[in-house]
Length: 411
Image 1 (cartoon, one colour):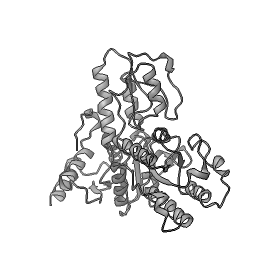
Image 2 (cartoon, helix red, strand yellow):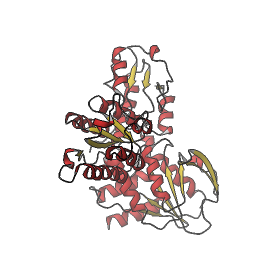
Image 3 (cartoon, helix red, strand yellow):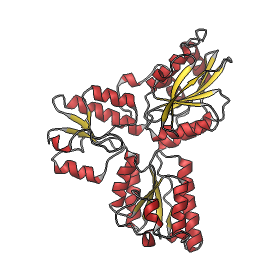
Image 4 (cartoon, helix red, strand yellow):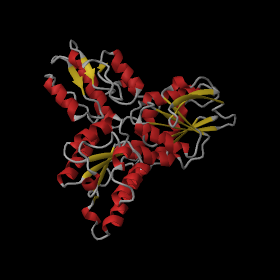
């Protein structure tokens, strides 16, 4: 796989070394068991796969290259490049301005842009409408288009479905930048509707089967369907694509549910005329991160810490998985660890910050699950580990632990 040129301050002396050891030992990622870093009074289970993925490293490399190549120009990002506050803050401090926030609200007036400005398209991609707007203003955005190739793959799948007269069902969060972009590209060639989860899908299936009136569609899916969508005709043939960072298991459930709906509605002999088997459009990194999280869930641990941006979809799904077994703390950086007893963390379900006391147990050793989302630098995970280690002065040295891991991996 291509090696990207990203700033060295995103690398780390601990996590990056562990990743390199595992990569050399298991290049095809057949083993998703975590790495144990045993410091004595505290032990960390490090996920087999997490952190920057291909699409994120590609976006970071292009964004910093844009800075280097255009020292005398104004440089803008359409919105956050990735969902990580530290990365976006660094780009902002280096002079890159954001045109929109993550919800699409304008932060910089379109009319103040000029053809001489540099505009970077983020890793999530953007809508056809915004691309046309930029082209109409004489701004060439193709040079610094960081759209993840796995997102582009979803768009191509949606286009193929449209060419075969299928309606596209997008599994995603309809306000998320990636889903807004996918919806825009999809509706250009096919009727399109967004479902958030299996509950949304059940409601859609009720309309397909005729169990509820078709007129309900417009209220149930308000703001989530393409212009001119007609449930009487546009729900006869469907295919599923997804926001690439959704839970793989949930996408599979949604696709299988719609397949069974078509079998019930049109018969087992004819369902293939009504349901397109698109397989999975999830990106490899999201899939690997989730498989690695299942590897973590096989361990006995006292708590889990997940590091990443609070608006990061793929990180939130890792949090949801860890919550099934452990007290789980979702933090954006080591700064949320107040001291040896107190931690500030984000409750994803309530969408609010909370503070928990005595998050580290009194028992020794204390076992900590540690991982992050695809938009989190290794250096940030490193910083979290180092801060927790600072509360255990009797811990073994980092070099001694890493040397032990190196011997174990080689053996």
